[in-house]
Structure formats: C-alpha cells, structure tokens
Length: 134
Image 1 (cartoon, rainbow, N blue to C red):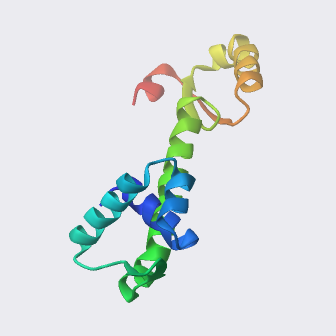
Image 2: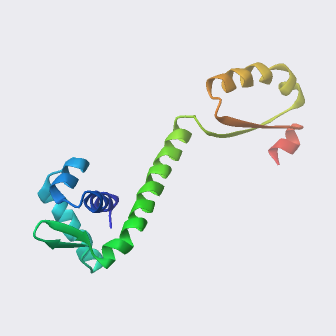
Image 3: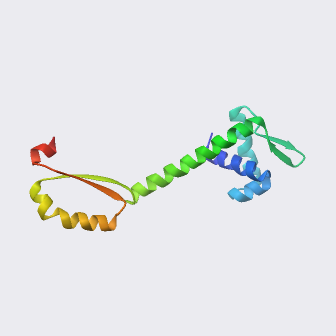
C-alpha cells in the first residue's frame, strides 16, 4: 500500500468520480484507476461500487476511508516536522560549557543564534570540563 494510492482513493471517495478525482490529484484518469485497482488487489476487496457512473464506497471502502485520511495526515505531519528540524525552525540544541566560557563568549553567541533560530530550544549545562565529558 502506497501513500499515493491512498491519496487517489481519498480523492475518488470525496468526488465520487474517477475523472474529477484524477484532475484533483493531477494524474491521468487511467493511471488513477490502475492504482485504485492495485490497491484493491493488495487489500483483497473492492473499495468502490462502480454502477453506471454511480461511484459509491463499499463496506471495505467505508472502513478504509478514515484510516486513509489519518495515514495521509500523519505522513504530512511527519514531512512537516522533519522539514522544520532540517531547516532549523524547530528542535533543541544541548550545549555543555565551562563557567568561564558561559560568562565570556556564550551570551553573545547564543543571543545571535536565538535571534536567527527562535524556534530552537537552547539547553545549556554549565559545569567543569571533567563533568561535561561524563
């Protein structure tokens, strides 16, 4: 099961139309239909009742729809969280420093870093060098 297939499934479930769903997800209708069929084969159940242009969810489709939406939302959240960490918009930096370093150099450097990256939490442990190594 692929995220793309779930996205296509949700689009068809929401539009109740394969062509409109394909337009929504920016793929050709045959490609979308092919991916839906592959998903149905993998799951071992038809997800849609296809009766003369009337598309309806089967019981299996009804069961899958909230799960598919949640999976897609979780994948989007994961993508966003990782991007925020990678782009230094969120996260935590832990720093160990000796007392002399904490009073002399660090305040200006940490202030500048925080100004550039306000979403990063700074955790500073001040101690002697032997304790910091441990």
